[in-house]
Image (cartoon, rainbow, N blue to C red; front, side):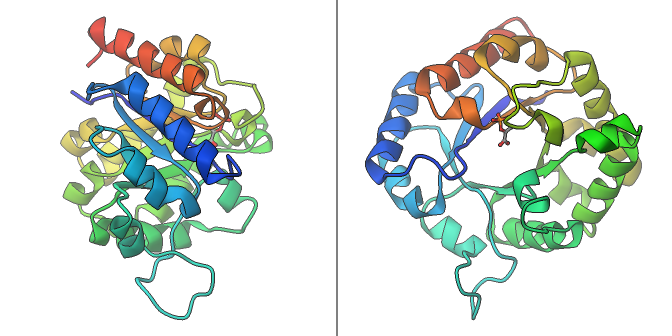
Length: 260
Ligand code: PEP
């Protein structure tokens, strides 16, 4: 069965290395040696090396929030997949809506980054999801289909099985407006059916699909209990250790109740 996977996207927070290390140490202490659910934190790139050091000996994964598709060269301000690996990263978030909608990142760009991340041995977390206008005009499934087709182009079934997807309805990110479990489960099931068509049923059953969008300790349990929701990509609530640990505890309880 699929393990639950909780990842924290710290975005451009906190503003100092000391605060970032403090947060990482608090999460490390709370997680202890538990490997289930899987947990990762994705701090700002400039703090990755410090957080890697802080997390030494912990099962918590470390992720970048973005990367360039090339390995090296004249790309001022950019960071490559081998660089992320070199500072201790195991994961990388790709195609977050704040990059798709705020910085013009396209499915083709996400696809190039995804292939580069896999070549470097990183576990990619590929984000997708519709805007409010797209949902209200009944285009959620077509938008998600386009994102899946473009972002995942050229992947083998074996590569696909190692990719994490994060369904994040844009209208639920950072808004406090969470998708209902029914809404989220519907799209997660749709994503899995699409994967079965594009790859095969066995691959579709292996892919971890996280939900993201205003996940908190008090709504995590009902979301994570849905059959096709395999974890959460958490923004705001990953910045306070009690809140993030509360989500991890909720995931552990869902697992203990027999989900995975
Ligand atoms: C995110 O940034 O991926 C996210 C889901 O943010 P939030 O949890 O704050 O909605």
